[in-house]
Image (cartoon, rainbow, N blue to C red):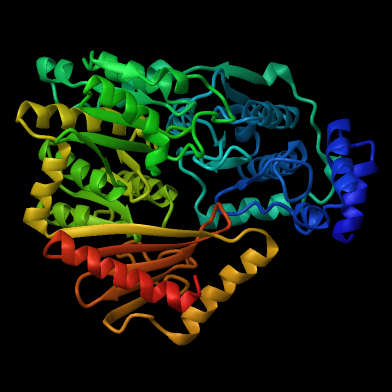
Length: 563
């Protein structure tokens, strides 16, 4: 059918709910042809990251029916792959505080249970890392998390996890995608669940216990002396982060009360993204009034955390790369290093943390963008130990990405803002006891390893036309070479890029330019939003010259792409 025929089918067929009919009829009343096309010109793609899109009626939207299609495909894949084991081991399902997340989670539970698969459904909205933990805790064959992370309130998403608690990587996702695409009739979906196969699961205490095993600083007075302002940004972090910090002795903890209220409209922020200083505005304001040492903000699914630090009577927002480097140093200096240690970061993450690791004789692995690839490495390391494959049997110490996601420990296979919040507070308390702040600590790192200035430019190009323009930009860069005169090497991740001893990285639509001055620039379309992203990691001898070089690189590539 054409997109107009599909639109009319959804608008009139009795299979679709009255609320769907009303929503689509409203589009008729305003003659919004462009909106109708965008909702129905394609199916919301189940990609390597699962589903993510704007909520609403339509084949290209997140709704009961597109979630139902994804779940039916997933169930068929699990039944064919695991047989009766899929039914008995079951699937864990979690959800965040977004609008419709719980509804979509219950829809997913109904479909899976209706197909004979046991379900462990989180009893409350809880973080992404807790879902990853739950999969392993109950020995499930898979997990599903309903979340759109830090996206605006209009979005929701559907992430699938494997039996190790790791988001599906491409070779796994391709198999599931084939099953999802095979569901070509919404009327074939069985939305009637079997309540006998759905167990309400709450392993929050077990998760927190696992997180606390990563604690490294045990000075009770220093921890009690650290003044913390915490905001969960209306999301899932409030319970686990608060409990963890209090249990670990951080008694001087206060909340941004207006933002502890779970609300999928995120009424106090424009976007619940801890990368954006605006998201921490209320926390910083409260800190200014009380003189707090540190401000923490976790995103709605609590897998990422932003940090603002009091320094000379102002609050400095640390970047993801800075926090990653600080955590790298802290973990390595406060851990008994095993025989074959390894840390993992993504290809768009600064080399500063990697430089620290290498100085400690730690092996560094670079993965593609997405924490699932870091989680995959943890699983590969563990399997290699089990099979005594000495070439691959590394011991995971720490993983991180520039977009504010970090993991210490192997209790989860995804980034974890709960354990990150704990370690950040430990670092801050230890620094304060030494008469320093985390800003002082990162400056010390720069003095030893060189000055780094990292930045991200993100350009939103919505709709069908926007996606076509993004594709043409990437094609132009590949056709005409690097925009930078001082390029030493261009890495195209759409070709074979080796990661010894684990073979080649999956192909990905990323270009990275390694420059002669030790800097690099990477370009990639977002996998979850209609955006093209440009990452910069500029290395220099001092702040001013590095800032100037960053601006020059920015102007060069934006001019080339017409941005």
